Length: 175
Image (tube, rainbow, N blue to C red; front, side, top):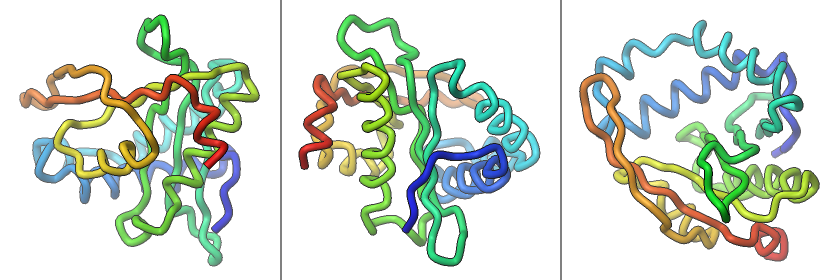
């Protein structure tokens, strides 16, 4: 598995991984009409814009590519979107195709992002996740501490989410 910083050329594959993962991981969490109406083309345009603006926005994307050259997962993160006195950076998204989950790819992607965050002067990190997402065990295994809860509306449904925090992300690099 190769972990590398994403390029603009990765936008179509990132969009596909994101939508395919949402449709498998969130089918019992997110309304079906929302999942079925997700657009690969719209997502690709959005990711292309994010990748073009990443350095200026202090946000980075890393991808996991298998031996056949197929992009199978990604992580994005950067400056924290919450105004929080402790947690200055954030993992915005981390998705791995279902067939590749449980192989340590998520850990590798997280570590690549954390290395960049430390290099950029960040020392703490936050991550928001759906409360019913079974991947919460992954964040807990990485040492994330449950910090806060929230709710938001999506396609007419109220969805609970929780935030995990790492007050010292350097500890992740020592494991």
